[in-house]
Every structure is written in structure tokens, then in C-alpha cells.
Image 1: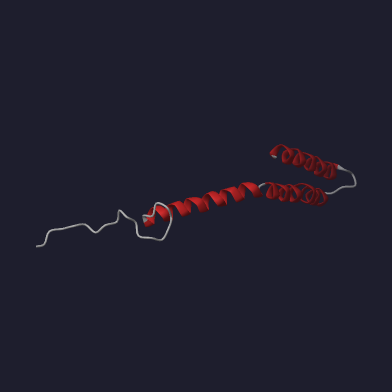
Image 2 (image 1 turned 60 degrees about the horizontal axis):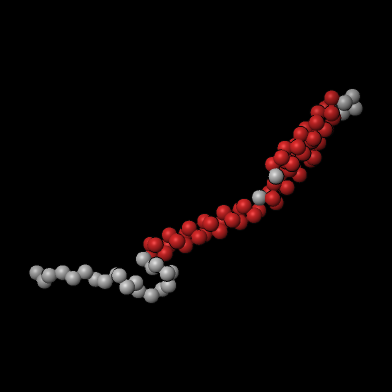
Length: 94
């Protein structure tokens, strides 16, 4: 995935360099070329290709939060009944 982005960035950089050094080109044209042919498409493609990874990370975070909430509440199975091991301690009368 990153190899294609690096290659496309190289091509866009060479296009911008050719624009800047051309007798009919300009520095402003080179900057616009680099941004519109390089940075913008690469950022869109990397964002779209990173969507499955972000989904997986979000699901993993939600799972960890659910496990933490279950451990905090003392429920081993996540249901809303009173746990069996949470009995009141027996103490002696004063």
C-alpha cells in the first residue's frame, strides 16, 4: 500500500520539478502541480485504504471497554443479575 503511495509521490515530485525548471513554467505552477497531483490524491487514497484498519481498531477498543466494564461490575458473563460470590461478610456482634 505504501509502495504505491511513495511511487506516486515520486512521480508528482518529478512533474513539479519539471514544471519549475521549464522555460514556460513557474514555481507557483510547480506548487499547484505537487499539491493537486501529489498530496491530494495520495491523502485520499491512503485515507480510504486505511478504513478497514480504523474499523478494526475501533472494534478492538470497544471490546476492551466492554471487558473493563464487565470486570468492574463483577459480572463474569455480562448479565444484569446479582453475582453469586458477592455475599455480605459475616461479622460478630459487638
